[in-house]
Structure formats: structure tokens, C-alpha cells
Length: 477
Image (tube, rainbow, N blue to C red; front, side, top):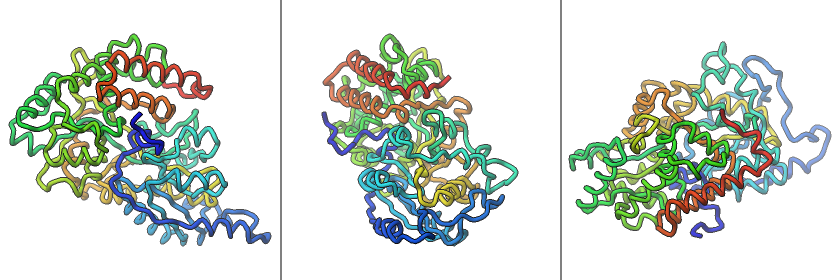
């Protein structure tokens, strides 16, 4: 098995989501321990005194409290969070502590176990603490109150009415809204507009056209498809998108609902895996891509060593430093297999970057208010500027903000898709199943197993997940 015990590759998309930057600032936990130990009646609760609940202060945030924020510092960096914290401290008189890190589990597991978690966590990246695990341990605060609070942009509206479709459903664990997924991302292939123009290649709309461009690239001494070999999360995007587009939404739901024929006996699934395997068999992969990390393969693609790479729309920000000025990054929906039920324009679009307020947070009121502020147009625009990505706030980016080519291309693809967007739930609901399917894809891309064996392994992972007593609470209709 190529994954180390570090949890690499276990991370679903967000996993690796982004992640070039390793930024480690340690926040001493001493302040917590001393706060707990200093005794005295006024100190017997961990949280600050609460202020009166008003329309402007729906959670009763106390002025002058402390706010402890930990964010995953990956492809989005963490400058956006620092800007948010400064704005929050200014408004509420709080003192924020900030940690940007990729070592979410290492830094936070001991704090969750010790009952002194931070107030707000962006629980993301390869080393995220699995959301289904936190939910089962009752470690996540129910965030329904945030959804039902007045929007900062228009107090006559509830926050929930200002969010894109899917923001609510994709934050559910066992039927409870406990995760705010903040980034609105699209998934598919990416290519260089400059390279395609120079070579006279048309962006493919069918899988056959895709293979033909890959073959032309190979003739020109360029790889066809690069993928992030050490993180099979990404090639799974290709396989699972092909299944959804060929088999339609029912094929996707069968997988999320752990049906006994989710993979085995599903012709769309076999066709998808065989299509991806054809790229391998025909030698159309960028040489060496199976052994590369996400940033290594993406950088080779930025150097015009491959025509296509699969990823989500965080790719542009993650690759800012490696992308040539005139690269002209473009998004491409997954090309269609024959007899597909969904149109070419259909794309996986989903919310990601999970923010949580721990159930045992010392300052839960401020944590809730922080999330409400994140769902304002002002903070959403800060994120778009700092992280080159869209948020779950509908029309949440001020029109005066000029977007980079890749992000602009993603916005246009979303418009073209209209109602034809889809998104899988199983990676959040069943993290172990997700990992097992990724491992099968890793074997497939290395030609150690054939498509029929991949189907067998994927179905075994589904059948195993179906034994989980919690599975009955996770159904999609």
C-alpha cells in the first residue's frame, strides 16, 4: 500500500485540497490550562460571561472575550482568516488567537480529547480530523442557530436564505447540521488556454475527443493526462463524475445510499472505470505522474508537460506561484461517455472547506457569531480576494472584484450548468469507504488491478459501510 500511516491520501478532496504551504505557528495551550486551574467562583466556567441577546447580537457575544481560531493553511493560505479575525476583534472587542497549520489532527486531537478545543476550526486537509468521527463522538455543536439568525447583509432574511443550494444538505451528519462548508467549488479537468490555442486543440466534449487530444499531446511530446498519483482522491473525481454523468443522479445516489448494486451490476460504473483505464493502457498518462504529489503533478502541468489535470477550483490559488502569467487557466466539465444521461455542461459543484464550532468550545457564542460574519458579503468578498475562490454566499462577491482566469472560467461553467450540478455525500458520511475506493484507484492507475477488480473492491467498501448503524440516518432521496 502506498499510503503511509500519516493519513496522506485519506483526505477526500479537501484533503489535499490545497496545500503547498506549510505554515506553522504554535499557539500555547497554557492559557487554557491556567484558566481552568486558577479557581475562584468567577472562574468556575470556562466561557466568558454572556451579553444580552439582541437582534444585533443574536448569540450574546460578550465584549472583551477571547476567540481561538485554527485554520487549515493549504491552497487558500490563511491571510483571509487573519483579515476576518482583525475585523471581528474590532467589532466585538475580542482578542483572537490564530493558528494556521496543516497538522490539524496532531495539533487538535489532544485538545478535543482534553475538552478544551478551539472556538472555530477549519477542519480540512490531508490530516483533518474526520467529520463523521467527530459527529459520532458528539464533539460538534449544532449550527442550526447560525442558519436561523438574521443575515448581516439583510436582517429581514435568515442566514440560511442567503446560501447556495446544497450548503445545508452537505453540512449534515446523521441528520444534524454541524458543519459549515464554506467554499463553493467546481470539479473537473483543467487545461491551459494558451497551450490549446497554440496547438489548435479544441476543448473536448466527449471522452473519445478527450482521448484524441491526449494522443495529439503525446505525439507533440507532452503527457495527455497528469494526475496527483500519491493522492488518488483526484483521479476518483474523474471516475465518479463519469459514473454520475453516464448513469445520471440515480447512479450517484445508489452509491451514497450504499445500495448492493452501487458498483457491481451498474453498467455506468464499469464503463467509467474502463474509460479511465484506457488512458493508462494507451500510455496517455504524463510519464511519472503516478508517483507524484498533487503539487508536483500540478506544477509539471503548469510547465506544459501535460494537457489535462483533474482538480477542484482551488487549483488556481494553490498554483499561483507556479503558473506562468499567460498560462490562461481554463476549466472543463468532465467529457461525456456514450449514452450519458446528464449533459456535457453538468458539473460536480459542491461546498467544501468544513468549518466547525466544537461542542465544548470555551466561547461558543463568539464561534457562532464568527460563522454568521463569514456568511456576510463583506467577509465573503475578503475570501474571494485573498483565496481566489467563491463561497457559499449567493452572489457573495462584490462585482467590483476582478477574478483570475481560472476562477472566472469556473463561474462561467456554473452559469452554463444551471440546475445540472451534482455532488456526492459518501466521502463525508463514510470516510473509510472513501479511502478504500481511493486505494483501489491507486492500484488501477498502476495497472496492478483491472477495472472489474476495482468494481469488486468498491462494492466491498460499500457493503462494509452499510453495516454501520449510523448509516440509516444518512439517506438521500
